[in-house]
Amino acid sequence: MKQYFGDSYVVFLRSMTLSLQNPIWVLVSIMQPILYLALFGPLLVQVAGVPGFPVGDSWQVFVPGILVQLAMFGSLFVGFGIVAEWRSGVIDRMLVSPASKNALITGRVMRDVIMLIVQSIILIGVAFLFGLRIGPGAIFASLVLVGLLGAAFSYFSYAAGLWLKSEDVLAPMINSIALPLMLLSGILLPMSLAPRWLQIVSDFNPIKHVVQALRSVFRGEYLNFETILGLFLALSVLSVAAIVGNLAIKSQAR
Image 1: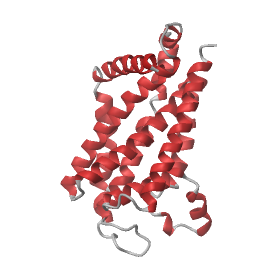
Image 2: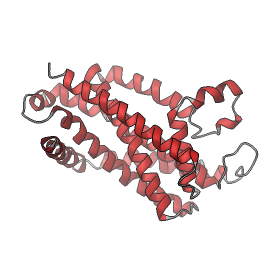
Image 3: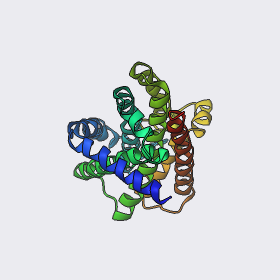
């Protein structure tokens, strides 16, 4: 266990160093959510409170969805990096080292979560300029939920990258997964406005419940059913994703 954490930290430092050497990607990934805030957020001010609209003001409804969108798309695309490292031989050299195989994935996920949290803080700060008002507890709780979700998507993305080993296959697969998850989560439009059959389908989407949990903590409701369910599902998805990611890296060592 001590070796696992030590090796994970070494891989984290390497991955973080590479990211800091190319900060443009961080800026590019945060620009799209900020544009959503600027271009789409003000439209919701006019519909807040109408029948079917989630509880809370427009920013308490919209910003949690944007945070989840940032976690999804920012983390799902990290698999492209591990495909490039596999092609250049970096993964093979790491696999023959005495380092823990699980740490080779965990260290990268740690880097992704730190980057995601920094981006989320920036996004929340910008949202304050538009009119968002939440307390420090809500900010902390939202960062925890977003971090858990981001870590889960990172594990899945790395696993897919290691198994597929092709950007041409990975890209359409990610889009085919991310788009339905986003549309059925109520990020852009509340699912209460959807037909009954679509609402039932969306109930099986764990991302929807994480979005609802985030909206609850933004309203200051930390211990209600929605928040607890969202936290439980985020932890469950992360547990499954970690198992899948570790199986993927171990399969490359055979």
